[in-house]
Image: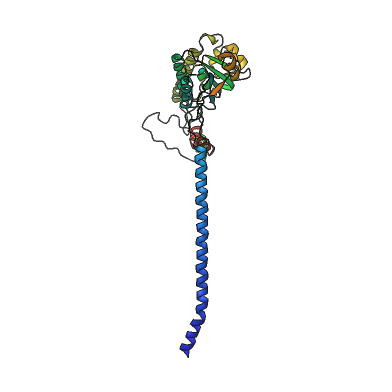
Length: 325
């Protein structure tokens, strides 16, 4: 009887076990199908994204004016901070200049400037290249046109041009050099943090913002800035020549900035006018072709994501080298 009762119990539970197993298997199949659908969806989404990115970023990184079949004025933008890897880097500006001079239909070149300045090295590269191209192509004149701002390193570049124009309210000048950093010595003491720096040179850490300044090192750094300032002044004098009224106005090299109207009387610029005015009335070619090297969409997208934030923070929170601005 026991055996019969046991067999009967097993046989009664089998249908329930099979139904449970069947439900489990069906649920597993449905889950696999759902996963497969989501996998296909995400693969399709990735494909669409890559296809869109390819279509968006397909233009060359160095998009620039392809010239014109008729005589024209070449225009090159110098906009924003003058620094390596920025839109107004020496590589971009010099590349644009060479392309403009190479075009047989270029009758004149305008540097349209709206910049607070930046790296003295980058500005110097552009200055030297402008003078070199002018020497090799005496029939093509270079004009700098300052819109809102043409200060420091931007004016350094402008001074290499044959003539400089600006609006009466433009800001022009700021012939000086600056270097900035912060000092966190007291902050470190309040926080109870000890700064440990190991160097193999006596003055290797002289710009460390977490250590007190030393008079000897401060004087030395001032000589570096003074040397850079003198190089700036010499270049401006070479570019502007007798037009610059620095003998009567030594404050021209003090780092001050003037309006376009004031700059004209000081010899910092040659006239008042816009880019279209210079193209039409001075160069005589109203048609303008933009030879500015353009950032690719990928570059702009990367900058918006803040790819260079860490680099800039490191500079500003610690030390920033000499800057013309």
